[in-house]
Image 1 (cartoon, rainbow, N blue to C red):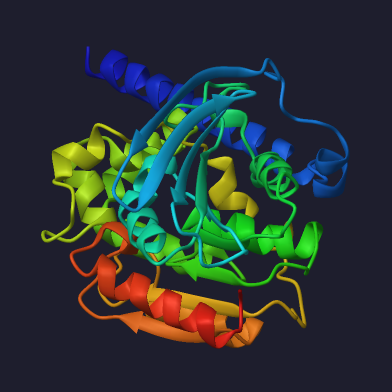
Image 2: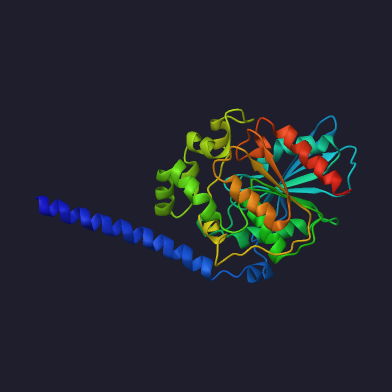
Length: 333
């Protein structure tokens, strides 16, 4: 009987190993045979069907417009007295959507900035176009490029976390031609795994194991407690439950793709850059953030007592003010 149980256990462990190996092999195959230039050369949006949803809300100093157009959700804040010709474009990170920028968009609209935030496919109000587990950074980049191309005046690009990685990919694979880029608690320039995996292993080893078995990154934010531990501080604008209920599934490939040999950061970037780091960020190290800022020649600010989601932390308004002042110093009109 004991021998039979031992044999069954070995078979179970073998099957589990083969399952994980199959998942990882698929991820590696996808990464190694992905060519960003080829992805960008072909339209990736398969839902070009026009506008399927639109609503506007009037406020004293600005209008909020939410639209789902060609399969992409866009939330725009349009000041009634626009003071700047250059629009702001916000790119969310893993699990999030356009909704996460609300507090900054409100703030910037009060100052006269027009801003837009998009949700990537399969996030928030943007319907799934390919299985989330098969989404790659270059795939996401193609949608960001399409959005940038919509504007007559190139926008200032602000990218949070994975959105910061996509912003770095934009500068490398699309063009070093934006008026400014703001990296908001962004993945580091050189290796997302080298910087982030030790932090995740220490914070949530169970999530790391579950993500490996499942083949996507959703287990990292599997409940309100785990989501809050990685993303916000207790004083954030959303509770852990409010945050968790708005999060979306996410690809695991993207975390592996932003690493050598698949990725090396661009050199000698001319675009003015600002890197904002959270002092108590649980998933991006201050050492990695500072190294990234030095690599790009970016200005660097550590936001005191702020966690990963800087745009919804208790001191979001002060952080927005720092960005606003920095943009004015760059002479952006």
